[in-house]
Image (cartoon, rainbow, N blue to C red):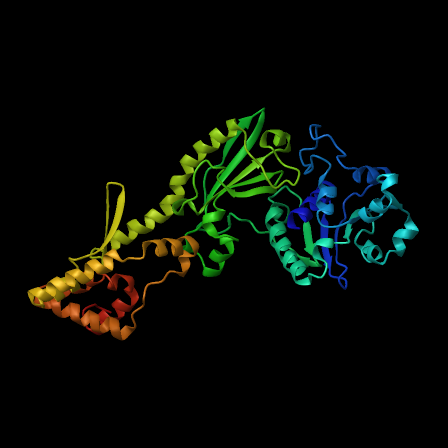
Length: 469
């Protein structure tokens, strides 16, 4: 449904509409859908032509702002949802209507396809249409879909699809609802409520990286490529991070977002040029193509699929190689910063021969102190315990959690009493080792687990007289 509605809205945008209303009604198990715009409307002849299947040559030259191509969108989109399609338009003060009814065509199959012509009085008497005419007082068009056979008796399904449609339209047409300077704004409403543009690149956030724009030239036309690196989850609120993860999460939504005349065609794909991986999941790339290159990109009738030609694929691969490092750097910097801060970690990371291994740090003061205080046979038991914990680390489960929702991963937290007791134990060990009291505070703040709680540790050290106020 969401793709069908978007296809109809394309016609409204091409007709230079300023306001587009999408209305759904359950109508006592006789649901209908209407898309109403205040564009320039159509004359009777134009309306008849618009109802013809394949009403235009896809190879003919069009306006650079035209979102159509085949002349099939309105009809195929509508008939994918309904058996009765009514088109009403007002232009130059003349109200005109045309209607396809598949049931009537089937009943009169011998007479072929007959298009019903609706005159002014018949239009006014149709209670569904009459209620929508106020939305096109000067000019505009109503696309009314009735006999929605796919949803008969399924009100909950229809309501769910309405919400899917909302999300889809807010993304697909976000550059029309919140345009850049110099472009006209278009208002889209769903059941009288305004839709809010959803920009998948979150460019307004201070932590979003907008990398240099690049252009690919083909057939004397330009394909513009604008890469973004979205903020790491610890640089953004939980709600905002969740919002921009979109359906499927960051891992699935990384990649190219291809726009044709500012209208989103395809999202979240690398066109099999690289694999989707954790370290690149914050990268999203806006790709703008002109409608004059439709034939090269293999734009389908539904305008929901595109495939770049070989010459552009090669250029995109080079661009990916350049920008991938920026996306990976967001994660690597976090690790480098952590490694620089924590001088005595609880875990160590070893990378060798293509493998990465995490091990418990056997040189950690707490472990060394425990082993030194135990008899030899007990020391062996501690080594066995450490080995058991390392070898049973749930690598696959951890990777799965990081891939799905890294912001939900948390360390087990100490309360203040537990930290204080552990802190006292370390302070005693350091004093017994001959470490000056003036150095104890600095050393403690670089040892796990205290390094993870800087504010709490600073407060406790001040209370114990080891840090000046």
